[in-house]
Image 1 (spheres, helix red, strand yellow):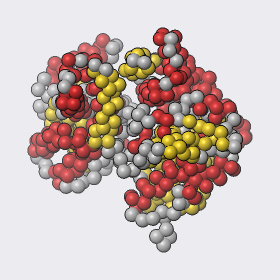
Image 2 (image 1 turned 180 degrees about the vertical axis):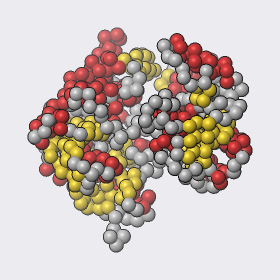
Image 3 (image 1 turned 135 degrees about the vertical axis):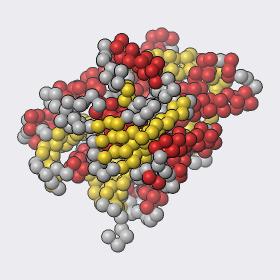
Image 4 (image 1 turned 135 degrees about the horizontal axis):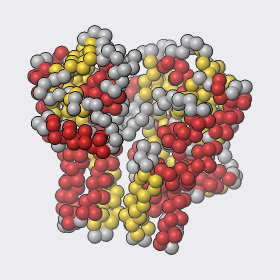
Length: 630
């Protein structure tokens, strides 16, 4: 290739992603904040232009000049019904320029107009910059994905945006087709299989039917439906709450762009929450004219608001099958792609259509966080018995009480098919504690050699440090004590929890709380560096139980073959750095889903009659039993 290298760009409505093929594999490239995906968002201020996560983080303070969702305008006319419908939900201004939509912003104290293609080129240029920093060389060529429904002119618009960004676009390819290629390469398919890719993202649903055999991918049909995705589901929630606010307070939120954007942000979070919980809370202080807005929306209500949209996802599937001259029984695999496929009702409707066929979710891993409960080694009987009693109340016979870090190691051993003996250290850092387990694993034999724990050392404690910091800062700045306001403290804590999550992938996070205490608005930015300074001693303390576990196991750190991470707080970059430094730069194993590994290992222990795990042997450690039979 003579040094020449092209990149692959997934230009999405809400998020974009860049990757490169090198050393025989695909590498997803993280942005400067450490995120593997970047917000497809552009913001303009009086002195600069912001792109990506930096733009999105200030959207509530600058809604009229923060532009998102503009991909939906590519190839459209201003008078199109879809454009008019979208404009009702956007806080920024879209104007008619000779029949074409353009976005109007104030930039460096001047009114500027941008086409959707110009804004798209800014995102593509940002993806190019991210790749160049990572690869250490100039990039001039790219393959860019687009929705399957894009026509020739829309695809040409993307190509033009690439040229503006300084890229020679080698190929424009459908998003769902690339997902099928990824599936085929990862799963090494040999026998011919009919695969249907169901790609439900932020703004559209794309269906592709392919026949895959070894390295041959034959696209049989494509079908799409525009304006049918996560953004549209959020719009329905926003409209619902606007009506409720007007009914309850006789005031129209449509008159306040900033309030609408704050409501929209809250509804986006609620939509994500409802994919894993039965209800979500909307809590916005001083939403409009000093009125606080607290509401709970259930998953059932969310499904009722969007049921017609959910059902509409079947139409393009039927069309794609008809065009491919196949019936649904001929499909061997249904691959889910896109964030909106996490919605349980969408999965249910899809599974019902295919007569209960299992859906393949392997291409879209879950990224939710968890909080881990602590099991005190000094009082194993009382707490373990309490768990057993809780199980009995729930109608369950508790077969076994197990340490979370141990189940993680079991999951790792089974997933990775260990044959030669390996020493594995499971590092479990959750919401309230850190648990370390050292095991010897060989084939299906798991010998736990030591365990160590430290309580009050986890995500909740890291958040407490941030809250204390902001309480001090608030008192210094306004001479008022937030400790006197339980409500204000709760709001601050919620904001700090969200900031902690953000700082795992970004260099800074915004705290924006209207009317925090005595009508004082609190807007602040905390950097990752500041968070690390506040928690430096706690982060370093995670090493102590590791040292104890290694001593008890009578091995040194050089003897550990694998360090397996589990628990949401292991996502914190500084924690990973301290851990890696302690093990002299050894690579950390992040292959286990942080929130699924514990459940996976626990499920294995219930399967002693199945063929797959009948020979599993777990040897206990004394005095802290890893698998206490009760």
